[in-house]
Amino acid sequence: MSYIAERIQELRSKMAANGIDVCIIPGNDAHISEYLAEHWKIRDYLSGFTGSAGTLVVGSDGAFLWTDSRYYLQAEEQLSGTGIKLVKEGLPGVPDYIKWISENLSAGSKVAINGTCFSVEDVRKMSQAFGKKQIQLETQLTLAEDVWTTRPAIPDNPVSEHPETLAGMSRQQKIELVRQALKEKEATHYITGALDEIAWVLNLRGTDIPFNPVFHAFLVISMDHVSLYINPNKLTSSIGKHLSKDKIRINLYGEIYSHLKELPEHAVAYIDPLRNNSILYESIPAYVPKIEGTGIITSLKSIKNEIEIENIKKTMIEDGVAMVKFLKWLEESVPTGTVSELSAAQQLLKFRSQSPNFQGESFKTISGYGPHGAIVHYDVSPDSDTTLQNKGVYLVDSGGQYLTGTTDITRTIKLGPVQDQVKEDFTLVLKGHIALANAIFPEGTRGVQLDILARQPLWAHKRNYGHGTGHGIGYFLNVHEGPQSIRVQDNGTEFKPGMVTSNEPGIYRAMEYGIRIENLVLTRHFGDSDFGTFLNFETLTLCPIDTSLIVEDMLNQQEIEWLNNYHREVFDKLSPNLKEEEKEWLKEKTQAIGSNV
Image 1 (cartoon, rainbow, N blue to C red):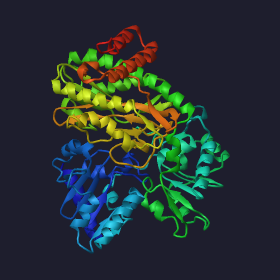
Image 2: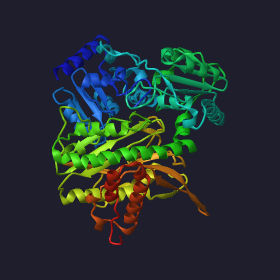
Image 3: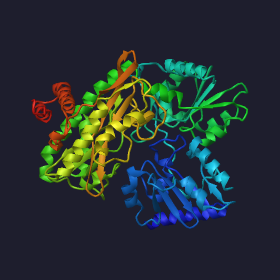
Image 4: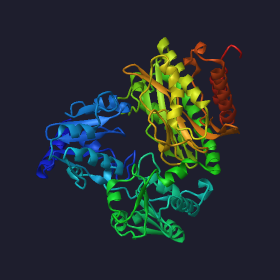
């Protein structure tokens, strides 16, 4: 890892030349994306850490990386020998990087960031914290980027149309919805750099970022025009004509900043401070009032329309068929001793690829056997690849991008003998999963109020997990999308009919195993009464849950009925698409459990 130390030292030299005491490098791009094109993986280049969440802080005599519990084990492995110290964000008594810098730098010190890679909210927090300690924040330095002399260019991959027949609405209809929202919020200009927002509202898709069908662009929607900022080489002549017909102006990607400085005096800008970079915000003239809130398009696209929902349900059948073929193959192949974490992930991709609508994976498959399953976002590599054996459990978290939807599913599979503790853990996770799947709740309920349902069975046994219970899912878009989530932290977003969210409780025992069960659920209208409107969840994912890991005595009758009903639906919907031997295998795996069978 000497090359990491050399890169850090080169950065320190540039810091010294500019009078900088600390440089902060996030895992972001100019669009505050979760997944990044190679061009933006500056933190990865400087640290060797590849997790999707993490911030590198480099000082004159130390380097530190903050990341959350999903990546503790991965970070320990990847930072070993680099000289970079891991800071386990979220643990009691551990300050975040902003507080740590505030407490460790003296008045008059200088901190450098590239403000295009930090959200408005993040820079605001830094400015407030550092200002109290008279620490200066420089927001327009590219010291870290300048170290990477061989940095790849921003991708110029072509953009494609997402047909209205699949999208359920035309781009003109979607733009009109944005304008209606602007009127309601008494704003005139909607400004966004969020790539999934831009792709959704324009019915376009791209391949700039692995696993996410998006493209690099910025967008401004006003009451009388729409301006798209993009590398024009990405647009075919046909798409260019279609956009022009819809009165969408094409501008160069980098012109967004100068154009914002020219907003008219009557303008009122609406912007999401969590999903747009700080330099974008600073480019808006001081004379323009700014309204902040959750992205208008983020809220609109989170509620799937009827055509999207119909297509998602069809996609779940396609994805379920692939999963059944994979699980049957896995059961038959592991005893041969030729299956590894990598080869299993590759085989699953092959099965998904048999669908004509399949466009690629929705994220890199988490294929973790034994202790690797305890690494929440385990990233299997040739160096870490392990052969699956006839013992223990195997966790596989995977998903697909289809023209008709996005999937995300986790199953934990028994490969052979396991300890009683494994079965108890699995059953507690299943109880939490079922409790959330069965939830009935009043309109206005937020994810923080639902989260306890999935955790309660584990809490009752003094067990827990460190990640969120559920996240929103895009429609042939990002596998992680907002605004809704199910987690301990409250983000203020209410669940509404049409939202698609994951249900994924788990438990992880370091150096032993990990267990997670994940399905996607659709929020729907349950009914009305004198006490208001009530909602519930419809489980969308179709794939058997491993009943050989269940301690039946730990399940109550309602839980057993849910599982049996779910497995009946899995068989009924998937079996018509399977070969006879696959159908027989699925029939066995979906057999009802319980004494009343």
